[in-house]
Length: 292
Image (cartoon, rainbow, N blue to C red):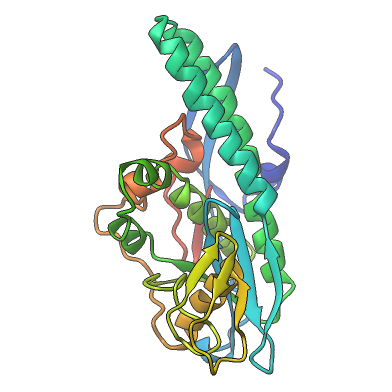
């Protein structure tokens, strides 16, 4: 049977063929008339350098609904530099999710469950394409920085701190935090880039210049309330990304340990839509061995 490999994972197939990776469980399934083969493979990876944690450049990664991802780090003088935002991708995913919920609600009232499932798979494929492109570009950003470490927010605390009312909770709990984190993590590890997590408490509320608690007069704007602060206001997501990076510098970073083997964030990590089974079902070990 002829097969077409995923271009992003072709090197894994070649590694298996060369004996540089070990094959694990495989699963063959059919979706919309097309057959897919998911193969679990494991291989060792090495970090790009053996520098200490203090010598690394922390890159804060802020995941949000407006800007799907925002990354930024400080330069040698401590100033925020080279921020990058994926705001258009955030709009695309919001539009696709709205289309999914609206269409499936109408189809379900008509009893068209089979059409709902097929439609949902198609929408999720489009969303997953956006996720993969953005997370790949996040890792490419990290590769351009000397001795990088990607710093993410700990999903456990994100979930526990969500209480914005029923409507906003449903939207935010449906956001793909866990999926984006998982994709960033395994793509970074494959490139030898370490990933750490920090407590996200107040990363969106504090001023990255003086630490004063500020506010957002608009979604994309953070305003500092400290009259003596030189910054005044800044892009809100960039401010959050820098605060996340600074948590690593302050020694708050820690590697997540999951005793139950579940790296999801429960309701906070679900997209409440059809999921990519390969990405969701696979657990990645981030120290020494990488599985895909």
